[in-house]
Length: 526
Image (cartoon, rainbow, N blue to C red):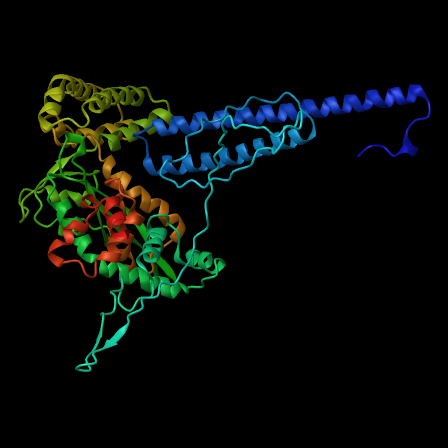
C-alpha cells in the first residue's frame, strides 16, 4: 500500500533515502521469490525423475511400487500447484526472472468430440481509418476442452391401448423389459454405479452423496440392491469367462487378502485371480481374467476352481499350490512354471537396501535373461523356444553354476542364501521356459490383475460378507476382462444390460467383451 501523503519526507535527502530503501526491499523480495521458485522447480524435476525411475522398474514389488508412485505423484501434483500459484502471483505483481519450468507437450484434443463454435465477430469498421469496406482474410481457432455435468432424465415408455370396433378386442404392446427385475434404473445408470464401485473404486455411500448433490437422492440400500441384481443378471457371462480361462494351455494364478466384516471385527478372506493371456506367445484367443473368492487361503480353493485343468500354471511359490502339481492328483497333475520376477525381487531388495555384492550380481544376470524375453515377446512358441535354446540356456546354466558356487560360501541363515535357495529348490520349475515357448518368464499378468483389487481395497475398506466377496469377484471378472480386451467397461456393461433380457440364451457368447465393439452399441442407439 503506498505511503499516505502526510507520511512522506519533507526534504530531498530523506526522500532519496526512502526510495533507495524501498528499492532494496523490493529487490530482496524478488530475490527470495526467485529462490523459492527455483527450489520448487528443482524439487519438481527430482520427483519427475524418481517417478520415471520407479515406472521403469518393471519387475520390482508391484504393490509397494504402485503405492510409492501414487504418493510421489500426489507430492508432485502439490508442488506443481504451488509453482503455478507462485508464478501467477508474481505475474500479477511484478515480472522477475523465474525458474524455467518445462511444460508438457500439449496433445491435440480428441477428434471424436463434438465441436461447438463460438464466433467472436470482427469489427464493423476499420479501427484505423473508420472505413466499412472490410474483407475477411481468415480466422484463428482456439480450442478449449469443456465437460458438461451429468444430465439426469426420466424416460417414459408410453404404451397406447386400442380397441377393435368390430370385436371389442383390446390390444397393446407388451411392457418393455427392464435391465433388472422390477428395477427403475436404466442400463446406463446401472453400469455407472457398478463400474464406479468396482472399476473406479468409489464406495456406494460416496456415489449416493454425489447423486444427492446433483438433485437425485438415491439411498445406499437401493444402490446395493442394484449391484446385487446386476451381478445376478450377468452371471451367465461370468460363467463363460471362467470356462474360457480354464481352456487355456497356460494360466497365471495369484491372490490377495480382503478384509471381511464380522461381528465386532473383520476377518481376512481371499480374492484369487486366474488369468489367461496368450498374447506373449502369439496365441489367437482373447485374454481374460477370472476371479473367485474364498474365506481363507487354503490351496484347496484354487484346486477346486481349476477342476480337471492339467495345463501350465504360473504362480509364486505359495505352499498351497504344491498339491496342484502332484502326479497322483485325481484330475492329473498340472505343470509348474516358476516366476523369475518374484525370485528377482528377493535379490533386488538385498541389492537396493544392503548393497550385497552377490545380490547385485544376481540381479544383473537375471536382467540379461529378461532382456532376451522382451525381444521375443509376441512371437510364436517355436520361435521363442529356438531363441531361448540358443541365447537364454547358456545364461541360465551359467547362473545355476554361479548360484551353487556362491551358496557354498554363505551361511544358511544369510538372507542372500535364502534368496538363492528359493530358486535352487525349485530349479526345474524355473527352467521350464527353456523347453516350452508358451511359458512366460514371470507371473506379472496375474500381479497386474490383482493390482486393481489392492487399489480398490483402500477405498471400500472391507467386504460386507462372504457373499459380498463373491459379488466383487464376479464384477472384477467382467470389468478386468473388458480392460484386457481394450474395451471401455462402462460402455460395454451398459450395452449388455440393455440387451441381455431379450437376447437369445444360445447366443449369450456374442455379448462377451472380445465379441463386442463400440459400433454395436452405436448401431443399437441409431
